[in-house]
Length: 255
Image 1 (spheres, rainbow, N blue to C red):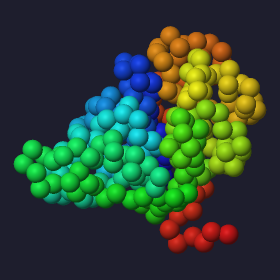
Image 2 (cartoon, rainbow, N blue to C red):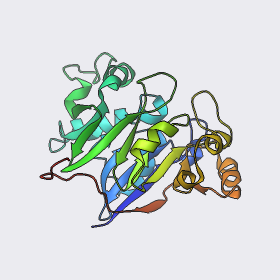
Image 3 (tube, rainbow, N blue to C red):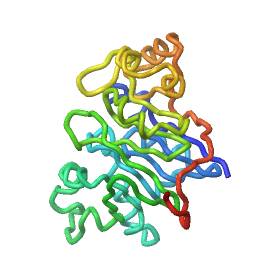
Image 4 (cartoon, one colour):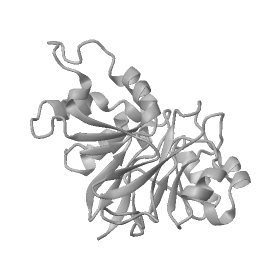
């Protein structure tokens, strides 16, 4: 069994040419679990996978560059009986009301009425972990704008996705301690809600930085500048090989 991470988009909200930050964990070359659903990221996903929409997604936070693809996702599920109510949305419980405010409160999701946005999905609120397809994944809070408003994802032994965040050294010491690849928010310059490379160099040890792949940067020139400093920088559509997860599987006992 092979695992990989596909970067559907790697840019911030001001870099549409890079695609909104979104990724898909693949298993044996097929999409397994997507992370977020921004507009450009979803467009890139559809191009990569022959027009097929995601069947399962984890949502990191409710900013529009990460959830603006929901209207198309709704249409793709609601109007096809085989998918209606079966597209899994794993959403950290504190985000459920925020996500509903962003994408679910518009009156009459269909002009004819009689339909709720959530009719199209299987909404699964999650805490510090959840199970997908028999594999346990971990969820952790990050530092983005406001407490309990943004979260990251860990597939133990394989990959940690930071989501939009400032540096979180004390968190990564716990959730990236099994030699995982770390996909980390990083631009050339940071701000109160996002990491800059100087922030990461100040907060993280060299060993951890060597495991990082940087995404959510402001444009191609910034990506080139980060690479010139010796860092691995994700490119739109790039496929990164992952290690076999050590995460618990269905039937295993947590010690």
